[in-house]
Amino acid sequence: MKFKAYITENGVNLLEKRFLPALEKTGKTWHLYLTRDHTMFLHNLLNGDGIQSMAQFRKDSLFHDYRISSQNDDRIAFSLDLSLLLRALRSAASHSSAASATRLEVKLVKKLPPNSTQPMPFLTLETRGFKSAVIQDIPISKPLSRPHLLELQTALDTAQDIPQTLLQVPDLSQLLNLVDRMKLVGDVVDVFISKHGDLSVQVSTTLISLGAEFRRLPVIGEQTNAPAEDQNLSAQTRSTRSISRGDGQSVQVSVKHFAKSLQCHLARPDCAFYGIGPQGSCLTVIFQFFIPGSRQTDKSISFHCRLPVLDSGSG
Image (cartoon, helix red, strand yellow):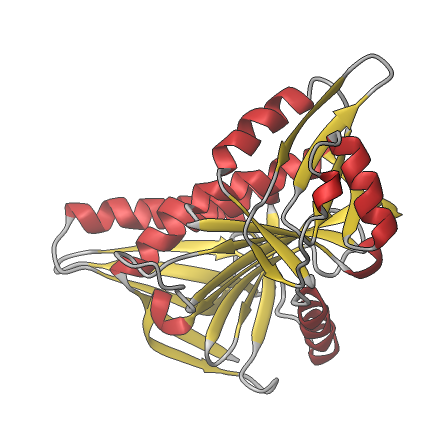
């Protein structure tokens, strides 16, 4: 089992300045899943509860001279503390900026830790300059066995299912400000999504309700036209009628999970989409990235979260 590659300057910027700070807000321990063509950061896919997050990169968006081999179809997966990786990358980036002609190599190694008789696996970052090298060892779990790797791949395949209707949210910062106030009101947020572009989020107690409604959002996937007779009704009445017609769904999710998913704005996505899984199975948030200087989707990067529902709701 071998892995070695050099992280490009673009790869360092993507990981150190954008994605790792965003991912770290979601959870501490992640699986790093390496294949011939992709590098994936996966959180909580093998556990039934909690927010699931997946960030996937084509290898050339992060690395050059990428080499991987294993008996599991050249696939390697292990878990690590993301904060340690972020700290090591930041240190490597600062060293690279202070020295000229440096190369940042990342590889899997086995080393004998101090006061130990058993070699342990590490992900090693080595920054090489003309006259010096800085080596940083990040402890990792033992790489997953073939059965566990297949279990992870199956969970990943399931998590890739996209809701039939997705709504594009215009402004994540508006939702960020709202969720900060929601935390003070309650622990559960009701999320309603319709096929004609309505999205509402609301936290309610016996004394207070706090929420926001977005109407006529861009719709991807299955869509319908909003009935004219619903236009002047209250948001609650419209959502109830939409659910009864079958063109709307409602779920309840944890305010804490909802807030964590919004921390993904640190990765600086260009668009965000919300959708509800079949039979209200989950709330999915998909982040889209454009090729710099264009409005074309950067297909080398994908990033999305799945929030577990507290109540399957209606629809």
